Image 1 (cartoon, helix red, strand yellow):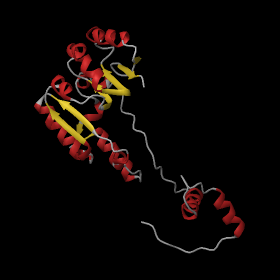
Image 2 (cartoon, rainbow, N blue to C red):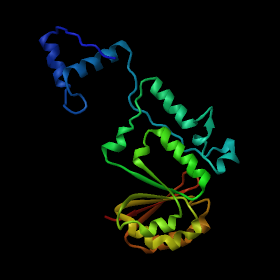
Image 3 (cartoon, one colour):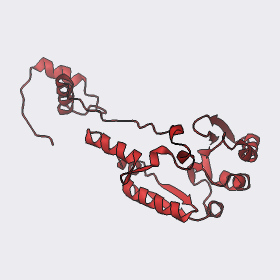
Image 4 (cartoon, rainbow, N blue to C red):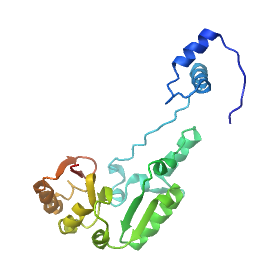
Length: 223
Protein backbone atom coordinates (compact mmCIF):
# COMPACT_ATOMS: atom_id res chain seq x y z
CA UNK A 1 0.00 0.00 0.00
CA UNK A 2 1.35 3.41 -0.97
CA UNK A 3 0.68 6.82 0.59
CA UNK A 4 1.04 10.27 -0.94
CA UNK A 5 3.48 12.69 0.71
CA UNK A 6 4.84 16.15 -0.11
CA UNK A 7 8.58 16.82 0.19
CA UNK A 8 10.82 19.81 -0.50
CA UNK A 9 14.19 19.14 -2.14
CA UNK A 10 17.16 21.19 -3.19
CA UNK A 11 16.95 22.22 -6.86
CA UNK A 12 20.32 20.63 -7.67
CA UNK A 13 19.14 17.34 -6.19
CA UNK A 14 16.00 17.51 -8.31
CA UNK A 15 18.17 18.02 -11.40
CA UNK A 16 20.08 14.84 -10.56
CA UNK A 17 16.83 12.95 -10.12
CA UNK A 18 15.49 14.24 -13.43
CA UNK A 19 18.59 12.98 -15.25
CA UNK A 20 17.65 9.41 -14.29
CA UNK A 21 14.14 9.62 -15.71
CA UNK A 22 14.18 7.90 -19.10
CA UNK A 23 10.43 7.68 -19.72
CA UNK A 24 10.70 3.93 -20.09
CA UNK A 25 11.98 2.15 -16.99
CA UNK A 26 11.90 5.28 -14.80
CA UNK A 27 8.79 7.25 -15.73
CA UNK A 28 8.67 10.10 -13.20
CA UNK A 29 10.26 11.76 -10.16
CA UNK A 30 8.17 9.83 -7.65
CA UNK A 31 9.35 6.49 -9.02
CA UNK A 32 13.01 7.52 -9.00
CA UNK A 33 12.84 8.92 -5.47
CA UNK A 34 11.22 5.69 -4.27
CA UNK A 35 14.01 3.64 -5.87
CA UNK A 36 16.70 5.79 -4.27
CA UNK A 37 15.10 5.54 -0.83
CA UNK A 38 14.55 1.80 -1.15
CA UNK A 39 18.18 1.18 -2.06
CA UNK A 40 19.46 3.55 0.65
CA UNK A 41 17.34 1.95 3.38
CA UNK A 42 18.16 -1.60 2.31
CA UNK A 43 14.53 -2.50 1.72
CA UNK A 44 14.91 -3.47 -1.94
CA UNK A 45 12.69 -6.35 -2.99
CA UNK A 46 13.31 -8.26 -6.24
CA UNK A 47 10.74 -7.68 -8.96
CA UNK A 48 11.73 -10.44 -11.37
CA UNK A 49 12.63 -14.07 -10.83
CA UNK A 50 13.66 -17.04 -12.96
CA UNK A 51 12.56 -20.49 -11.81
CA UNK A 52 14.87 -23.23 -13.07
CA UNK A 53 12.91 -26.48 -13.02
CA UNK A 54 14.45 -28.27 -15.99
CA UNK A 55 16.55 -30.83 -14.15
CA UNK A 56 16.51 -34.56 -14.83
CA UNK A 57 15.15 -35.48 -11.39
CA UNK A 58 17.58 -38.40 -11.09
CA UNK A 59 17.16 -38.73 -7.31
CA UNK A 60 13.44 -39.38 -7.70
CA UNK A 61 13.66 -42.00 -10.43
CA UNK A 62 11.73 -44.04 -11.48
CA UNK A 63 8.96 -41.55 -10.57
CA UNK A 64 10.41 -38.85 -12.83
CA UNK A 65 10.46 -41.05 -15.92
CA UNK A 66 6.79 -40.21 -16.49
CA UNK A 67 6.38 -36.87 -14.71
CA UNK A 68 8.89 -34.05 -14.10
CA UNK A 69 9.69 -33.29 -10.48
CA UNK A 70 8.28 -29.76 -10.74
CA UNK A 71 4.79 -31.21 -11.35
CA UNK A 72 4.71 -33.52 -8.33
CA UNK A 73 1.87 -32.80 -5.91
CA UNK A 74 2.89 -31.73 -2.41
CA UNK A 75 0.02 -30.96 -0.02
CA UNK A 76 -2.40 -30.18 -2.83
CA UNK A 77 -0.07 -28.08 -4.98
CA UNK A 78 2.72 -28.81 -7.43
CA UNK A 79 6.31 -28.01 -6.50
CA UNK A 80 6.28 -25.14 -9.00
CA UNK A 81 3.11 -23.66 -7.46
CA UNK A 82 4.78 -23.67 -4.03
CA UNK A 83 7.72 -21.78 -5.53
CA UNK A 84 5.38 -19.22 -7.08
CA UNK A 85 3.59 -18.76 -3.74
CA UNK A 86 6.96 -18.16 -2.06
CA UNK A 87 7.90 -15.53 -4.64
CA UNK A 88 4.57 -13.75 -4.16
CA UNK A 89 5.08 -13.80 -0.38
CA UNK A 90 8.27 -11.78 -0.82
CA UNK A 91 6.78 -9.28 -3.23
CA UNK A 92 7.56 -10.74 -6.65
CA UNK A 93 4.42 -10.37 -8.70
CA UNK A 94 3.34 -13.22 -10.96
CA UNK A 95 2.28 -11.52 -14.18
CA UNK A 96 -0.58 -13.54 -15.61
CA UNK A 97 -1.31 -10.55 -17.82
CA UNK A 98 1.87 -11.18 -19.84
CA UNK A 99 0.05 -13.62 -22.11
CA UNK A 100 -2.76 -11.15 -22.64
CA UNK A 101 -0.32 -8.37 -23.48
CA UNK A 102 0.87 -10.22 -26.58
CA UNK A 103 -2.55 -11.74 -27.27
CA UNK A 104 -1.02 -15.18 -26.80
CA UNK A 105 -2.96 -18.43 -26.87
CA UNK A 106 -2.00 -22.07 -26.29
CA UNK A 107 -3.74 -25.12 -27.72
CA UNK A 108 -2.75 -28.37 -26.05
CA UNK A 109 -3.81 -31.89 -27.02
CA UNK A 110 -4.10 -34.92 -24.76
CA UNK A 111 -5.30 -38.38 -25.66
CA UNK A 112 -5.51 -39.95 -22.18
CA UNK A 113 -8.63 -38.99 -20.21
CA UNK A 114 -6.87 -39.00 -16.81
CA UNK A 115 -4.22 -36.59 -18.06
CA UNK A 116 -6.90 -34.34 -19.54
CA UNK A 117 -8.40 -34.01 -16.07
CA UNK A 118 -4.98 -33.25 -14.54
CA UNK A 119 -4.26 -30.63 -17.19
CA UNK A 120 -7.64 -28.96 -16.82
CA UNK A 121 -7.12 -28.66 -13.06
CA UNK A 122 -3.62 -27.24 -13.50
CA UNK A 123 -4.81 -24.66 -16.04
CA UNK A 124 -7.62 -23.56 -13.74
CA UNK A 125 -5.14 -22.95 -10.91
CA UNK A 126 -2.75 -21.08 -13.19
CA UNK A 127 -5.11 -18.17 -13.81
CA UNK A 128 -4.54 -18.56 -17.55
CA UNK A 129 -7.39 -20.92 -18.42
CA UNK A 130 -8.93 -18.33 -20.73
CA UNK A 131 -5.71 -18.39 -22.77
CA UNK A 132 -5.55 -22.18 -23.12
CA UNK A 133 -7.62 -24.51 -25.30
CA UNK A 134 -7.48 -28.12 -24.12
CA UNK A 135 -8.36 -30.66 -26.81
CA UNK A 136 -9.15 -34.26 -25.87
CA UNK A 137 -8.39 -36.16 -29.03
CA UNK A 138 -5.92 -37.50 -31.58
CA UNK A 139 -3.03 -35.22 -32.54
CA UNK A 140 -2.92 -36.43 -36.13
CA UNK A 141 -6.59 -35.70 -36.67
CA UNK A 142 -6.25 -32.24 -35.12
CA UNK A 143 -3.26 -31.40 -37.32
CA UNK A 144 -5.18 -32.42 -40.44
CA UNK A 145 -7.86 -29.79 -39.80
CA UNK A 146 -5.60 -27.00 -38.52
CA UNK A 147 -5.20 -23.92 -40.72
CA UNK A 148 -2.11 -23.31 -42.84
CA UNK A 149 0.70 -21.30 -41.19
CA UNK A 150 -1.37 -20.92 -38.00
CA UNK A 151 1.21 -21.96 -35.39
CA UNK A 152 4.20 -20.01 -34.05
CA UNK A 153 5.54 -22.70 -31.71
CA UNK A 154 4.75 -26.40 -31.90
CA UNK A 155 5.93 -28.67 -29.06
CA UNK A 156 5.77 -32.34 -29.97
CA UNK A 157 5.74 -35.07 -27.31
CA UNK A 158 3.47 -37.80 -28.61
CA UNK A 159 3.61 -41.10 -30.49
CA UNK A 160 7.09 -40.84 -31.99
CA UNK A 161 6.49 -43.56 -34.56
CA UNK A 162 3.87 -41.32 -36.18
CA UNK A 163 6.00 -38.19 -36.45
CA UNK A 164 7.26 -38.89 -39.96
CA UNK A 165 3.71 -39.56 -41.18
CA UNK A 166 2.59 -36.27 -39.63
CA UNK A 167 5.42 -34.32 -41.25
CA UNK A 168 3.42 -32.88 -44.19
CA UNK A 169 0.85 -31.49 -41.73
CA UNK A 170 3.48 -30.29 -39.26
CA UNK A 171 5.22 -28.45 -42.05
CA UNK A 172 1.97 -26.97 -43.35
CA UNK A 173 0.69 -25.54 -40.05
CA UNK A 174 4.00 -24.02 -38.90
CA UNK A 175 4.38 -20.43 -40.07
CA UNK A 176 7.61 -19.08 -41.54
CA UNK A 177 9.90 -18.15 -38.69
CA UNK A 178 8.05 -20.62 -36.46
CA UNK A 179 9.70 -23.15 -34.18
CA UNK A 180 9.15 -26.91 -33.88
CA UNK A 181 10.38 -28.46 -30.61
CA UNK A 182 10.48 -32.26 -30.35
CA UNK A 183 11.03 -33.93 -26.98
CA UNK A 184 13.05 -37.12 -26.27
CA UNK A 185 15.37 -36.52 -29.22
CA UNK A 186 18.34 -38.31 -27.65
CA UNK A 187 16.64 -40.80 -25.33
CA UNK A 188 14.62 -42.20 -28.28
CA UNK A 189 16.97 -41.33 -31.12
CA UNK A 190 16.12 -44.38 -33.22
CA UNK A 191 12.40 -43.59 -33.19
CA UNK A 192 13.17 -39.97 -34.03
CA UNK A 193 15.43 -40.77 -36.97
CA UNK A 194 12.72 -40.78 -39.71
CA UNK A 195 11.59 -37.27 -38.71
CA UNK A 196 15.17 -36.03 -38.44
CA UNK A 197 15.89 -37.29 -41.94
CA UNK A 198 12.89 -35.39 -43.31
CA UNK A 199 13.99 -32.21 -41.54
CA UNK A 200 17.57 -32.53 -42.74
CA UNK A 201 16.35 -32.93 -46.33
CA UNK A 202 14.11 -29.85 -46.15
CA UNK A 203 15.97 -26.66 -47.09
CA UNK A 204 13.29 -24.54 -45.44
CA UNK A 205 14.29 -25.77 -41.99
CA UNK A 206 17.35 -25.34 -39.82
CA UNK A 207 17.80 -27.76 -36.92
CA UNK A 208 19.71 -27.95 -33.67
CA UNK A 209 19.89 -30.61 -30.95
CA UNK A 210 19.87 -29.30 -27.38
CA UNK A 211 21.22 -31.81 -24.81
CA UNK A 212 18.75 -30.92 -22.05
CA UNK A 213 16.89 -33.68 -20.22
CA UNK A 214 16.08 -36.38 -22.77
CA UNK A 215 17.15 -34.11 -25.61
CA UNK A 216 15.21 -31.41 -27.46
CA UNK A 217 15.28 -31.21 -31.25
CA UNK A 218 14.71 -27.64 -32.42
CA UNK A 219 13.68 -26.93 -36.00
CA UNK A 220 13.15 -23.36 -37.22
CA UNK A 221 11.25 -22.73 -40.40
CA UNK A 222 13.19 -20.11 -42.34
CA UNK A 223 11.43 -16.79 -42.73
